[in-house]
Length: 157
Image 1 (cartoon, rainbow, N blue to C red):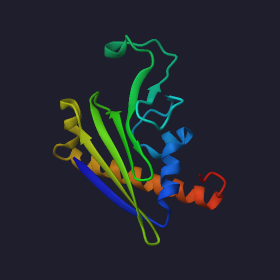
Image 2: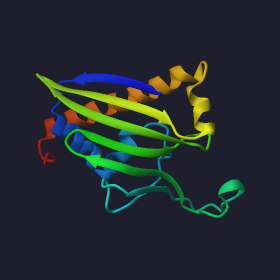
Image 3: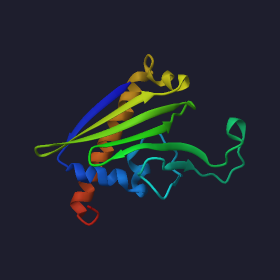
């Protein structure tokens, strides 16, 4: 397990508005293919993100032209969002985003837990620091996009 915290002068509602916007998914998540189809029931539990490709599938994914790359496990606004995510090594990780309101902004906590043996490789040895950097990048992206929403003012719930 790895964790990262970031504080920003952004309201918790704005951060969760970023999470709930399917069009912003590729902008705040890290290490996910840029092309994806997102389930219309996003961000509710059971929603699926798939990698869509026009190429002929091959190898271990030859049975699935639209590879599942993420599944929403929990959506509990305004505080928590949990996503099961396919790691680059083929395993699965659980990515939890918790947002806590604080005076002057909010604290975003991103926690990543490997669920499969192949995903655990990303948390051993020197690769652990890269996993921590990815968690920190997710928190920073959420705060940056939340600040953009607040500056715009038109997309807040």
